[in-house]
Image 1 (cartoon, rainbow, N blue to C red):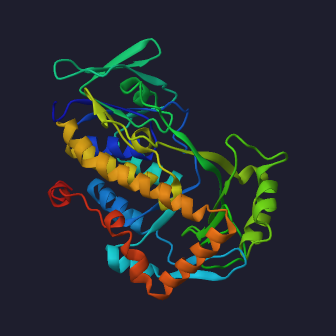
Image 2 (cartoon, rainbow, N blue to C red; image 1 turned 180 degrees about the horizontal axis):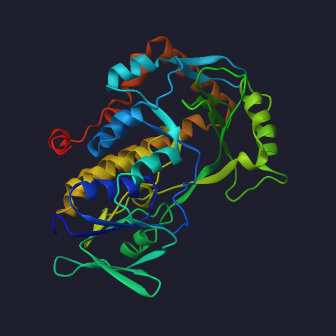
Length: 389
C-alpha cells in the first residue's frame, strides 16, 4: 500500500477523528464522512487513561488534554449504604503510570480532534458505505448516495453497528447484548462536593465524578433485559433503582431533568474478528472490538488504534498484528470485570466486597498493578513521531 495518498474515514467519532488527524499528520489527504448532521457526540463524558493520553501525545494534543484533569483528591469504591470498600489514590496512579486519569466531556475531545484537520475535511450528513475494499492493484471505493469515491486507504470507524465491518466480514456474528443497560448524565449540581467514586450494589452500579468545568458526570448500570425502557421516564427509573443510595447520589438525581438522562443498552463483540483489515480497508474502535465499559477502555483503545494505524498505514497486516491481540485481551477482561461488578447473587456480592476491601488494605499499588499492561501502554514509535511536531 501507499504510505500516503487519499484516505477516507467513515465515521466522525473519537476514533475516526483521531485516525484522520494522525493520517493527516503523516501527509495523507483525508476526508471524514459522518452520517449524522453534526459531530455532536452521543454520550456525556469520556475517561482518558495514560495509555490514550500517550497516543494523543503523538497527535500533539496530549498536554492540552491533561490540563483538563479535575484534581479532587482521592476517591474509591463504595457500597450502596456509603461504606468505602476501597480507596484509590489519584497521586499514586499518576506516579505509577506517568500521568493522570482525565475525565472530560466527549464534545470537548471531539472539538479538539476536529480542530487538527484542515477546513472541509469533515463532511456531515454523509451516509457512506463500502463499495469495494480494493487490493494492492486497485483502490478501495466508497459510495455516498449516487456518488463514489476512490481512496488508497479506507478506515471503518462507524461504531458498534459498523456497516464496513459487515461488508468485510459478512459471516461474523457481530455484537451481542452484554446483559445490562446504562444511564449517563452530565449536569451542574450546585452546592455539592464529594469524592470521585463508583458504587457497586447487587446487579447495579453507580459512578459520580467531578469535571474541571464544574459539572458532574454520573453514570449507572443495571442488569435488565435488552430493549427495556422506563414506563414514565429514565430519571424516574434511576430514582427507583438508586434513590436510596448514599450521598451525593440523591442530590445528583434531584438536579437532573428527565431530558438530561441518556440510556443505552450495552453490546459487545464476543467473537473476535479474524483481522482488523481486508484489502485497503482497516477497522478501528467499536467497529473492530466493541467492549463493555467496565474498564473504561473503549474510547481509549480507539485512540490507540488510530495512531498505530497511521504508523502501519503501508502494511495493514502489521496493524492487525499490533492491535487484535491487545484489544481482544482487554475486551475479555472487561467482560470478566462486568461479571464481578454486576453480580446479583447476595453471596457472590458479599465475597466480592470482602475481597475488594482486603485488596484495598494491602495498599493502592496492589490494586493498580492489575492495570499496568493497560494504562502503561506507550506507542513504540512515540519518540520517532515526536520529532515531527
